[in-house]
Image 1 (tube, rainbow, N blue to C red):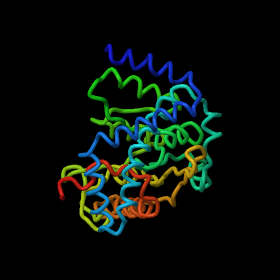
Image 2: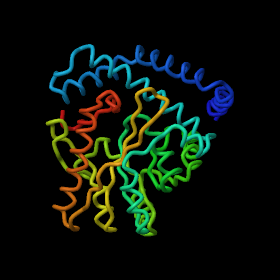
Image 3: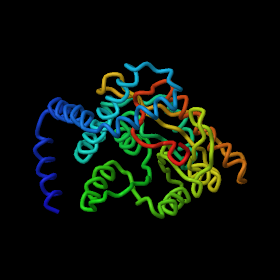
Image 4: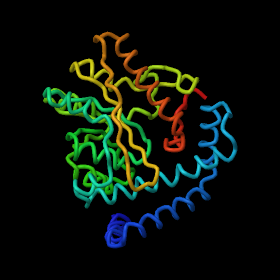
Length: 287
């Protein structure tokens, strides 16, 4: 608890500084973390070599490795800022692309199963989606130090997002969809044989969660991929992809809809590799 109180003091001090100062501090810490994490850097390099079959140069892989830490630091900073910023401030940072696709579904009184990834500034993307487009329900994984959970929950619920802890969260998602609400699932993390299905991802088999397809099938709703990109880390574009319809409620329909999500994510990462979260073991259990 003492650590958490010290963190709150630090948070209060940081939020009084100009944003450019906060960003400079966090990116400096990211560079330090990069130098102090050789084992994690090795995972990033192995993942990149595995995914791109060593087609990337050494310099390209090193640049992606460095940016993994920078991007994680920027997401942490965004979480802290999301506890205080307004919808108007979010709107000044983001532009939506293909929003008409989503608005058309919402005007029909339907919910949407949004799927996203740990890509770009996902904390800003989630807050902007929930605050400026439609309120969403999502899943969170609690910290090992439980006192920090309340901080994360406050940051995300500040922008109309409701959250359920990972264990048993699908019941919460189902209830939201049943009431014509929308949900957001992060579908890029490693799954397993119990909860996922095997598909090739960058030409290597690994398990993928079918949760989005199962929910969409059960409630006859579309799956809409959403991702956020920025060239200057100041102005962001949130893009909605073409909706995926689950054709039926059988296992084949679930598999096909899940595969379409995987293919879309792979194409996105291939086009913008540095923005993805390469430091986790996406293919664990398979290599």
